[in-house]
Image (cartoon, rainbow over all chains, first blue to last red; front, top):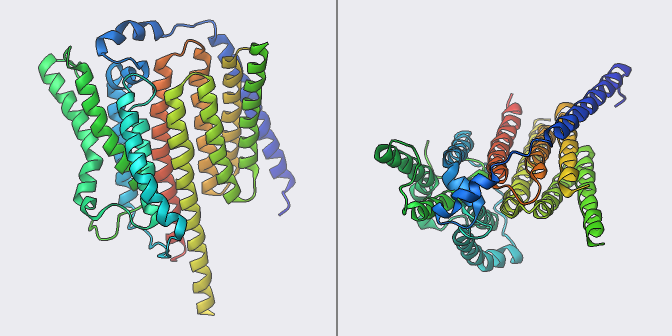
Length: 225
Length: 94
Length: 90
């Protein structure tokens, strides 16, 4: 397919424009470098009050908890969209083969344990709900690839409940703190770490199920509209 | 001395990142693009480690490289299945 | 050159590369790839200039961004496949 002269010229113009844009970004970056105002010290100052040792988790689940709440809502909306677009295309019902037969059986329990560890350790070291949830999601993807999917007891309504539980718990906590303190998501002192861990645990479960559902890419067979 | 070696490593990482991005975006084979994208995600995870953003590194490796890569491969397979099916239907009509 | 500046510049490069692909390439999957790379570039621009010691606020924002990006990618991919499926049913 030979490009016309016009198209060539247009592409060249685009490349030059993008180059200019890149230079502008670089200029913006270097003019920014002089302002090193950061919230690092503020976060460090308030960290002991949360009972956590990982500042990123504290930011995600306490200082900017509302953003994380909205993030859970975004995940939920994505699943709504993916499920609403139709049933899962019928997969190749081929036999998985030796590796896929054995691997999930070995790995899924390990992944569940790793997820639990990441969730727990996230309060003091790198980790947390999203990291743990994504490992759970990976376990779910393995199950789907192996052809078995979720255990039968966990399908249908239970899976859907698991997907929304994180968002519901988060919104419930927001409402609770709003009614108690007048300020949303301002955890009562002394309860902070417990509340954060509770929200994170339910969120991990939700994230795992949601990521698995996103990979499935449609409404599971057998679920009515 | 150690500082110079670390900077060389950083340069290598940044260069690999840009080179991978260029290759995957300009490749003509979609499958290769997706595989390179997964490699890109893993190198990004290394970059996050170099920037001392360990939580981000974990999230990038699992979600950015792993899950996004899986999503892309799945979509690619489904798209090819659709094209195959259309080809069969056209043959059946002839 | 500190690592921060280097990776911030790389972020700019990634953003521009991704934008180029997003605009010029026609296949939806390639646009999705371009968009994801733009996202990675933006994330680098958020975290890298903060330098050492690590600043937790942009890191938290980037984690949020990664999750949002995967949600959008998943939805975009399902839309692409469905669009292709219904296109053939004319």
